Structure formats: C-alpha cells, structure tokens
Length: 288
Image (cartoon, rainbow, N blue to C red; front, side, top):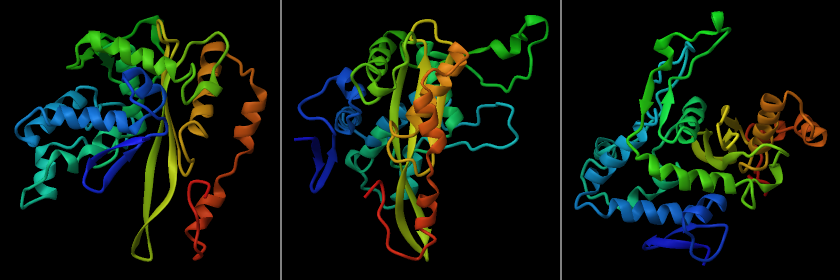
C-alpha cells in the first residue's frame, strides 16, 4: 500500500510497494520501513521519554548534536532531541511515540550539519568509530600527530554495521542511485531529501526540497566519506547524488570520465527556485 498508517489520519509513504527488510528499506529509501522500525523500538519502553533518551545517546555517539571540535571558526551544534526536548514542546505532557515518528527519517526536530553527515558516514565505513575531522594543509614529514588519531567509538556493536553497509552498497546497485555508478569503484551511499520552509510575509511556506547525498568509497578499505547538500535541489539522486559521484571519481581516480554528467551539473541552474518566493506570485515546488 506504499506506506503504513501509524496513527489516526497519519500515514507515512514509501516509493516502493510490499513489505521491506533492512536491505530494501535502505536501497529503496523507504520512509515507511524506518518509521515502522522506529515506532516499534520506542514502544518497547513503558515511557517514550526513556526510549528517546536511549536512541539519542546512540545517535550522539556518532558525533551528532554536538560541536565536533573541527577547525572551522563557525559551525552549528545541530540537534538530536531528548526527552527534555519534548517536555519543552509539550509542557502539559501527553506526547506519545506517534508524535515523534518523523525522527526515523531525519525530520521532526532533528538538525544536522553537512560535516556531521560526512563524519557519520565515516563512522559507518569504519564499522563503529571515527576520528574528529580536521582541516589539513599539509602533513609534515608524513607523520600525523597522535592527538589527531584518537578514536571515538560509537555505542553500536560492530556486527550491526555490515548489513547497513550492504544496504548502502545496494543503493548504487539497483537502488535509488543506480544511475550514478562509477566503473571500477564500489560506492556505498544514501539519497536524502530535506524539507524546506521559510517565512514569506509572515506565513510559514514550504519551498522546493533540499537535495542531500552521503557516501563513502570504496566499499572495502574506504578512502573518502562525503556529504553533499544542494539547496532547492529536489530529491537526493537528482542533484546532490551526481555531484557526490563526480567528486568521488575525481578524488579516487584523479580524473572525471563522465563528461556528459559533469557538463549537466555545470549547466544546471537553480536560480529560478530562489526567484519563486521573492516574485510575489503563486508558485509550485519540487518540479510541480
């Protein structure tokens, strides 16, 4: 039925059809699969607040919701909600697991930065650990200071990463990014779409979605982890995915062989999306 109903009048859609397990949930980017799993996980606990705090602790162990200590002079903490978050949102109480199911697909109250997304993929590629990202100009004498090689270990057991990695690999092999494969490079990645709202004349208005793609490569012995976000770029495979694919190819091969894709990206113009909401005229979003 292309989704599942999780509360009265509430339905989470899925592009695919039929029941999914983890692999297909990832490769087909099925919101309903992740919403269903998240809901069942939260409902294992008597109090949803306890469940949210356990989930939040796991997410934060990937560096999410925290300043990561990298070298840029600006940055955002992001937000991984806890039970305290929902006590502020619902001061009179009464919130349930169905009120927060959108967390399952990275929406709801969740906020992340691109560097956090890239670092999260690095942690997945390493099967459970990451190093704090740093901006490097050069490495003197080919030696890296030990303070930059401190491992941060996540709270997720290593055995759970392999099936996730297989799913991310499947995204490029029959999944939502199958058109972006690079000959000779096995990539693991995930398409993403971020809802986009702005206040126009004091009214909260939905704009064209942001396009997101996260990836690491190669699948075995990975050398690069990356996150690409394109404002007003529609869905992940449309703009962010091709850009990430070209960047990975350039980094690992030193050249870009898919000149047609490169030209398509160079010639792409999203200025019309910015023009929509300053025009004062009614407008459609996401290609509509």
